[in-house]
Amino acid sequence: MRLAFLSYSRPFGFHRCLHRPATAFGGSLCSSICPSPHQLRAKPPWRTFSSTPSPLDWLAPKRGHNQKNRKGRPRVRTGGSTKGTTVVWGDYGIRMRDHDRRISAKQLQIGADAIRKRLRGQRYRLYTRVCANIGVYTSGNEVRMGKGKGSFDYWAARVAVSRILFELKGDLHEQIVRDAFRLAGNKLPGLYEFVRKGDPPVMGITKMEAGTTLGEMQRPRLKLPMNVTAGRLPATAPP
Image (cartoon, rainbow, N blue to C red; front, side, top):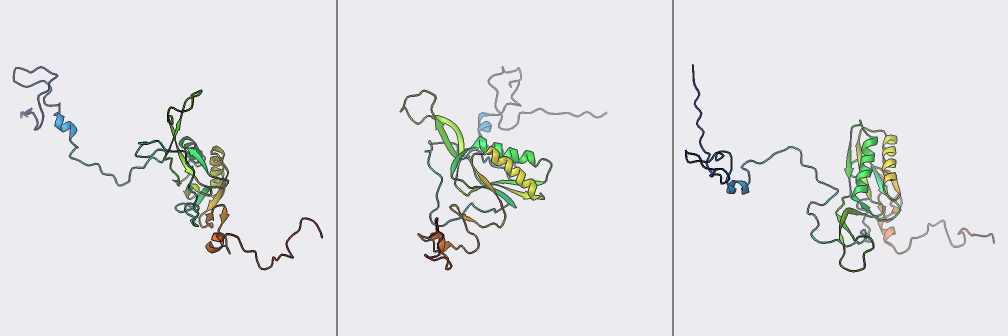
């Protein structure tokens, strides 16, 4: 018959606990399980590793709100940029087409949930092209003017006109994707349109279709085609 003798010794770096009385052997009852204050403040010796990166929260900024944001307006690109108006990662997308506005994080979450609910059981990946990083501050009802900007209420995103909000990629039928984006557009404020990968970009509210160049769009006035002259312009009443 073999007996296994275990020695219970206090690990290195552990201290005598102050909230337990000392025993007759000179140590406290929980000296072997209570870490020292230095070990509580120190970082753990191991580092967590994962092959997949942790997803970032697109409905709130990582830094929080250190200073109060102004209401502001969505950025208007006047230099001819078409950034954010085409589908980049997915195969289909939903694009705002009426005018710029501020969309709250709750509304964006409801729109994304509507897409996921419609595509339940399908194999797809949803990409978000906007993030709610603007803080909205409000005052209470019947509050007099002044006394500061108000307290934090919710996060919002400034979405410019012709901006892509969501993209979808996967083995999906186009009509199913159209229906999912239609349900999301009904939940979100504004008017939206369905776009595919490869569709022409948009500068302002004008689509850069075939025959339209960047130089023509940057001119102060558009040049009329050659077949349209001053004598052939359509008239409102016959001569």
